[in-house]
Image (tube, rainbow, N blue to C red):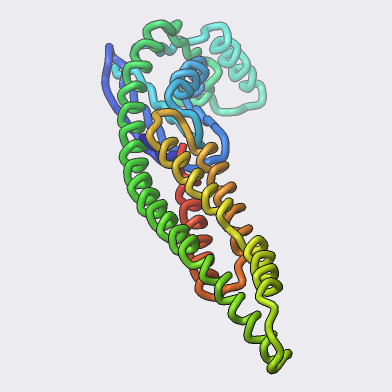
Length: 291
């Protein structure tokens, strides 16, 4: 089953006093590129989340966003730094000698932020890893399901393109021999025009036609195209990331179609070669979004 590189998953829960929200989204990328964003205090979770993501995501530009808050805010306390506060008071009172009015109040002291110490309780990292992992796995499951659903649509579309590709290959195989026969007739007519009433050397015509047939023969190319189509179809049945493999197969398909085009000098065959190349390009565009 194919998986798209585009996906989105989200989960939000409150577990053991912590509100946890995980969001995972991804877009196309040639390789794997992970960005993990967490609150600064919980940055130790980044590598853990990266490792979890990498177990299920092989390719794509992936962004993981974590929001983690304690519901009761019980991990934070504020205390007065008495030595600093007293130092401020003593310094302010010394201003009396300059004749300034003493209007020192509590509200005026609150503006002196460094007289307060904000203390945060030590984090229980094992607890946080456990609850974040629980929420992350649920978001990841939703993310993967979306990738699979998009992959199924891509697979259906690709199979339609492959069927059209085989049809064009069949048309080329059918019409290519006719181009050789047409060449032989044109050659005979030209020779008869030149020689007028003289006898035409049939063996020479057959020799020239055989040389032409060898030059324009596309049997090897069409056989390889059919082989590439089988390899492509087989690869789509696996559960492994196959985007890069499919890209390589399409490159080989394109190479064979170019060779057929360079050999083709018949309008009827050329039309099918143009359509063949168009189908291969559509396939190439589609697989850019496959993991």
